[in-house]
Length: 392
Image 1 (cartoon, rainbow, N blue to C red):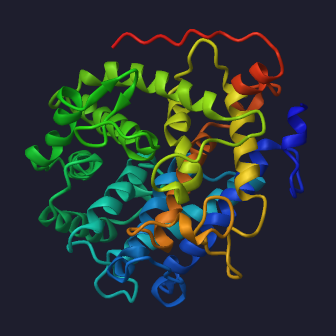
Image 2: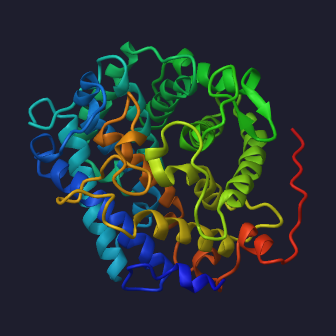
Image 3: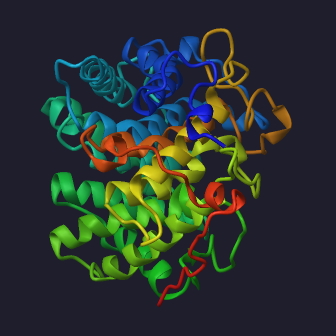
């Protein structure tokens, strides 16, 4: 199988980075254009399974979008075509963040009602930490104060006893980083539980006390632990030395994710929240940002594997409605994939599958020649290394 054959499905380019930028721009544009114009509530269609979740859909859309695009935006604007696109979305994102936290805006969103705002405030601040310079530092002090005040409202929400315990930790890590003020228990509780109680072995953490076969290690657990612990290490607070052991596990888990990508550029439909689509590979992308590759994995083979996935998942138009908003589905318009907590905003976590766009074009991830990924090599009869050992 030729790798290039996977890179040209209904695309006007064979350039992998351009394929990624085109797909990501298509996904995020309705969210950020409307939030910046204060028309998000007016124009965003809100599909849902349970009606009570509808009122949180807009924060889900913005928070999750910011989380995924942040490393790319942090590269900043420049005079290239892509740099000008980044400049556009930096401007739209900073305006959007202020609007949704401004009580005088028609797009002011809910931050203090149980329970969902806790989740997406955490995604939002994870994005702000990932793009400290281009997003947070480009918001004036009045706007920053509005955002801080909105985030502090989430302190009235207690998390469920699963991956949610990382959400208060994520928010408090951001408040620590930007204000120096934090709630110690909310900051450390999630980290301490995952460090001492919920590690299952072989790089997998439990989504709560028990292991679940799904992608929540990539949707939430590995990425948030990484970003929280990075802040703790910077400030020498708590069990920040756990970061070294965790990054060792992240590297190994990312290797598992790379091997899950089939020769055709598909991956198993396993577990809940499959309408998050490419978010299944957030941890793999984050490992790439940190330069964490197993010895048998090269950056270019990850690029080729993920490009094939993005092409398979987003090259068609059934994922989007007539105005460009994501529909319920895994690969198209598939309503039964939605779960009781699903709504239109939920699906924008898919943007976190694009984290490697935060690597500059000169990085080996983008600049090296195409390479076959593990499953493609294995199923074409080429030799692969079967050893993927981890010492916990």
